[in-house]
Length: 513
Image (cartoon, rainbow, N blue to C red; front, side, top):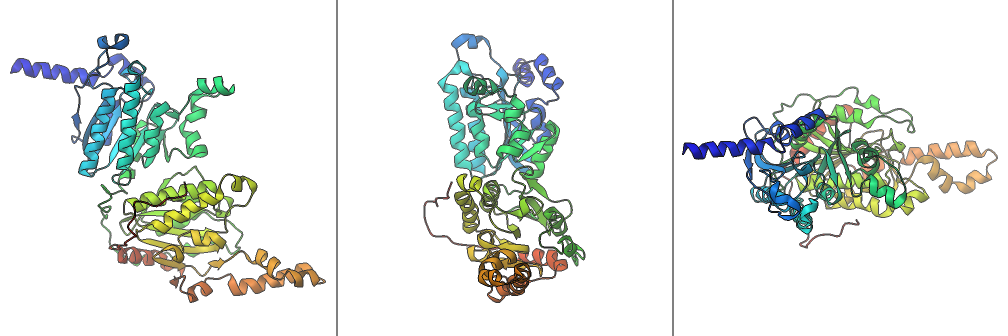
């Protein structure tokens, strides 16, 4: 028995070395953690249980039978994060560059299947050069096996991807299917075709960082949702992100302890400027309404005319969708509509209530928007809100104009409660534009057209630039004093916590992708 235990310990020590001490040192020299270090930092101390530690690849071509490493370049297993079960795989760049083989893929698939069967989140820590070329189509099939499980798990359990090194070619599609992608700045990149291929095809010279680095995907493509400064920061952000999510679609997020006080925010109304054309930062409003330091923004650098993220109100996890007047006056455009729609659908999948803060003057006009599909992209956000069955509360702060009023979780598309501040303006369009159309003849016939337009603007604003006509029709449930807003929201979400909605029986809808 002693000899067998000695052999087992030798095998375990060999597996933990990955590609060897020299390669581990190189990983550390780059400021990166090893695959196992990442897993143990993610999991609660002492909770990680590894599976498949002694797995080896089966390839015999190109001399591969003489190059074998226990674990085959990926650490897989389960453990706890903040006391809750989580499954994880962590690719090991020190073994064949973290490349994916048939057995490497089988280990990941096994973890994903266990996660689905046991209804718990799965986290992928990606650090791989792509498919293992020596295995040919077997490695490509391994990727497809993973993609298929990603799709089966979508909406069933939360899936989060961390890109902590290279992620190229077919490898990028698994993170793209998952719910959220976190990238490490300056040490991770994602692209379908690398700089060399780009240069060959287009003669364009570009670095890996500029082509597919964290900053590029955070600002230009929207592929990454969160950017971390280093490996440790990435792991901490993963833990924080998980705290806002349930284990599966069958559960709700556990509430944090909270005692209701007076919750009065005396100065919150001062955030809205007196001039309707002056911008303000919607995040200042979010900070006043939510529990202290609880807001976790998603897609912070992409389509910043809309703000989305998680927060807590009265200890309850909620999702927030808010127009941002500081950027493009808060209008909806192609990217902001797409960004908002995906976030709404995630929250709806996992029973996370939605708070929508509305200050929207409409959709962004222009040929660029029309030719890039503002119609179908705006419809994505409309569709996402309309199909959502979670508790949905809207607060109109200032402008709610035109079709954008409808799209931003209006009563007409199923919102549960719609509040408005006295500064709210619910109308087809702004007073100036409306007056120019309605009173065109009178203005043109006037000897002082500017003065007449000014008078007609005031006349229109007096009739429509307020929330009371909408409230009179029941489209707004209550016009509230801004200082009372947080208390109203806490009570509203408490009232709605057992909401149940039945939808028509069908296979699925056809969202305008």
